[in-house]
Image (tube, rainbow, N blue to C red; front, top):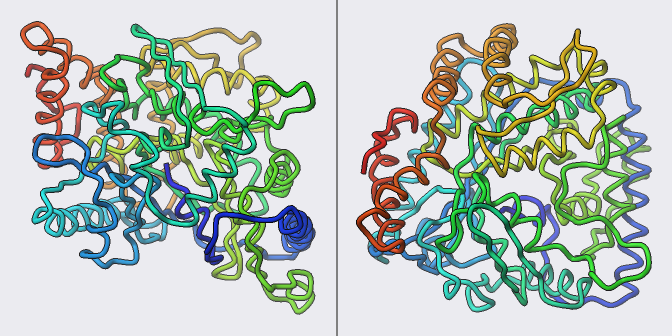
Length: 502
């Protein structure tokens, strides 16, 4: 899960120990940044501009035996591409795709860039016996692969780790139910690095930010279920999106023993329907103690007074150490603008599948946008959070609570029923944007294929593994399944067209 884009917001973090005074100064600066942001948001024309998308994709690095290979810094040095960054664990890398204007075929451009990047990185990884795999959680990952020894040796990650451990005051405990149950203790945040994701950035109009954000929050559970690709951890069959439970617990910095007020978990779905963009930034500042108090010299109020746009580096750094599944992003470039970062979708199975997930979630959000104030008033927020965890656990088999424009009573419905209904509405909403019809038809056809076949990455992985387990030991079955997955992935064939017999 990326903190790279978040934590490295123009502040280089050189050390991992800070004094109480530094934390106080930083917290005060965040409050000043919030004041400046509030002024910016009132500025006529702020954040107006063309819609655009961007994405980050995280990868595992595996060796010829399909075990993790902790060589991310070696590969990054050989590739020497500023868009390629190292992740928390030494067997993960992240590629930051170029932003694309939301017109023509933005996802086809993203897909081509991603395929070219994977090819280029694999060429440099091959002499080191490494290869990239985009998959939510690597099926061949073992507990012995995890530990402080695999954390990337970068001051920023040490600082993050120390702060979270200090706040918690004891090991992180991980308990995930499912067909199988898993109970673990971790003495550091390295378990968080077992997750790899496809994170989508969507630039939206600043003056309607809350509506767009709420629309994304409402439809994320549907998109997550259809995109699910993380059904196992350490040989246990768990949730369809095991990452969601694992990420939350692996960096839960709340001390279980405090009798006093506890800040909420730093990985969360939301604290209610958003009323304004400012509220989302203000809440993260008020609810979560700072972790990495690196300071800039900027006087943000003076910059605003001059009619310019400040970088708000401290606010962005702080925002980058809280991990809501959908996150508000302030960017000072291009006259200043706001984006929604959609963080819940897994990496994989293929480049084209990830692009289909991206276009679908945007289309679905646009489909509910006009009614969003009505929908959020009849659906209490905690039901959407409930839908999110249901979708993560049961994938496309989930039942969720969905508001309808003309409905009086809320009720449980099969998630696939809602997906079927949302798909043509997403298509219509996208047809009124500047995106080409051919792009919409191609990518939403992939989502339709998953709905009609009832097949997702998670279902495919589990289905193949269970068949292989009839004749092989579980460890061999997971290994063989991963080999098939990687062979399919290299062809960039959409998942729903993969054969379901090993």
